[in-house]
Length: 313
Image (cartoon, rainbow, N blue to C red; front, side, top):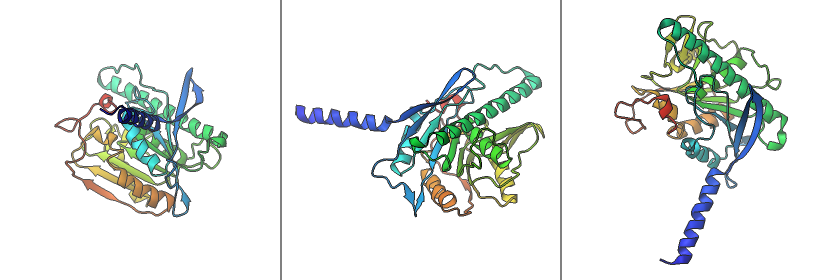
């Protein structure tokens, strides 16, 4: 074998690994003795960072893992990050406190109610940490991530936090945020909103929402799980509410798919791109309500089921 060619190949491979993992890391908050960090991935140098004269938003990603595990820049989502940066988007992947870490659920109805309250607390902690990350970016303009131009995206627990963050802003709960702040959009992969005050309502118009959910999801409710005033309201319920209020939203329902939809970020890139360019950057109220039955989409086993812990393996 030609040693020069071998050396050249090794150098190219090493450079590819460096580029794929290149990031900037900053500590954005200290909460409950926990140091919280965020990673910034910049657009490729050759990428177009505007669309029809409008600056592309940064994509803030909130990882999944049942509020008990996961990491902000897991290797499993790096391919999606690279797809975004290659198309001119900045990616900001954040930590948040894991409110369910080490929690052991009790038995029976009492145990379920206590667990739901703990999930609600975990959601609230996640929202607080998202707001802190936004405030950090606003206080540090030298990082060149405009805080007034962010789309928040999340998977599973992260999608719950993303939706709850947008809902909090639409409800006037903006403590910790820069004055007048609102996300430019939300992309939710198998998300929901947890509440103990009844079904969530959007008091004011939220930012544009893009919802992905499996109709047979047994981990995060597709419609509603729990009691009439205490439970989890999923993407299908939220879409019904948004339709009645004539909001800017789209939902993609995956027929008989389970929680594996939480990992469809890369698979749904063309849909995300259209949403970002049309609903977000152009401000067009373009609504899609689609039922998808596509056997080519990823599954984790023959039954299409996945445990939360499997999402990021």
